[in-house]
Amino acid sequence: MKTHNLVINDPIHGVMEFADSNSQSIRTIINHPLFQRLRHIKQLGMGDLVFPGAVHTRFNHSLGVAFLANRIIEQTLPLEKKREWQWIVMLISLLHDMGHGPFSHAFERLTQEVGLTSITHEDWTPYFVEEISHVLDSETLKVILPLMTKSENLQGEFQFISDLISSQLDADRLDYLLRDSYFCGVSYGKYDLNWLLHCMVAITDNENRLRLGVSFKGIGAVESFLMARRLMTQSVYHHPIIYLLQSLTMAFLAECCASIQESSMQALCPPLLKKFLEGLAQYRDKKINKLQFMKSYFDVYKRLTDHMIYQWIETVVSNQKGLPQKVVDLGERLYHRKLPKIFRIPKGKETIALSIVETFKKDHDYAFWQVGLEGGKFITYEDSKEKILVKDKGPIEITQFSLLMDALVNQKESLYYFYLDTNLLSQKPIKDLMCRLECF
Image (cartoon, rainbow, N blue to C red; front, side, top):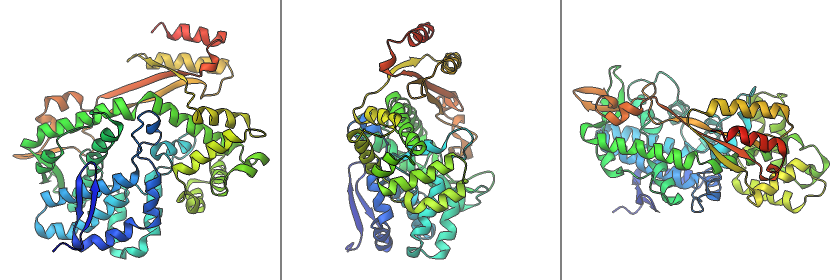
């Protein structure tokens, strides 16, 4: 009787059942306050302000990744290897997103400015793992940390586990595409998950490493999966309004950092957030380095959630008197969803548009959140990273069988937008700038 199995109902995968042998340890991790914190960090950051249903969290996603990773292990490895690796894979899957801050990837933009060493959620993850190390044995920690931090030169079966957790065909992407698509109410992220899992195999590559790949019958499922990722990137992950909301939120927090020592900010800002912003201000001013900042402020960072930032925005809007004007302006725009006007930059015109806008901003005193260019580039499939292998007469890279992937491999696609604060539309310099850009 499976009386001790952990069973969780999920809108994407249905009944997710975790094996009896690990269920108690999994419960211990899931119930830990640091894992429960992921309930309060939305998967798509500000995405719910564009797609109202996108309120799913890193907590939901992490459980889904662990479930799929276990299914892949069951499908691809022989019995003795399943027993050896199942718990390790489950742990890494559950813990892989614990390092995320409020609004997920958007929060990382606070440290992605020129001259700063960027701090990502992967950088924070080892601190979280160390915090729950009392529920793990030392040998397990030695195995999972290199895999979670993507150490180079992984050999043998370690490369297979790395492929399963972080590659171009990993459990993370398998889950978030379906989950994000479902909660956003769009169909772009759908693909045949069950058939893709059925076709997954373990392959020994030319360097004698065990790799995660697919059988020949799974090529179509991989094509569908990669196209789903491409379409979700175009339509959701690089959505112009989500980009701008993230930019405005991080601009708001950056302005809070710059003015955190003012008496009005000291009086109103919640103590926990105030302490973090003070530390972040020191890091942004290069008074402390990355390691000093992370070690000194992890105890604060690990308690930050989306709710705390939203609460602070509401406080700013409700108590405007005496607060820095830039903080108030940005807070109001976020709280009341007063967004800039957006114009799509045609493909191939990004460089000249950027030049025009940068020259304009040098000649006029506008904040970056009032006028500028936003966007980025993405690649659907790269053959320089963890190649997707097909098991045929040996391991063969998927572009050798797929005309679609051969056409898309290493192709950089770009999505850029010009944005403009609507309060500026009547100003002559802005009108002149618009005339120059409208020639596109």
